[in-house]
Length: 254
Image (cartoon, rainbow, N blue to C red; front, side):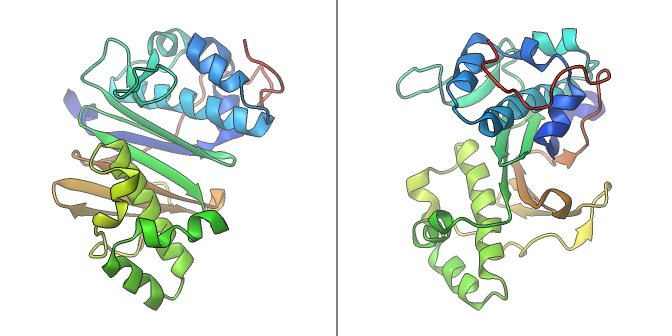
């Protein structure tokens, strides 16, 4: 695997990704195009597309492949639900590359992705906590986490940190939506204390046999978690060519 064997993660703005990869439409499979086209809002469609582009950039970085359009087109993203067999949802994977684990996430205007030779999950959320999510604390947090949240100086920030961590655990297959309250992360730090290599606050800790990487990206108003059996690291996506297409898909991309 070489030096690139450890999981790579990337976090970026939606427009940033679509501007970095001018021919982003060419990378998507028919299923991805159909799912994107079914989204009525242009912003939601752009977030979806950008996340699916970014995960290919992560995989190219992991595999030490040049991040040009031809290489990215060869990285075919597929999903398969183990329950119903649908290709419309389920854990993402790269066709023909079973040794590579991938994960992606998107929220309003911000996307995140990760790729590794070991299982990896990533999640990103905006720091403004919707009431619907805030009200889910009783179903998401353990008893110890709920007690810590009540005593925390910023309860919303505490809850959001645990939320993104647990979303990663779901993506790793370590728990389910119904089992989140049974996972206790109250012993982990509240969040990043030190700046990472790119100046974004970042911290790395362990939970059982997993690495938990936390980031607070104030520039993008986002909270990120990466969880993996390998020690993850974060890098920035790099441009392929000069932007040639609109940053936000305005209509169907088929």
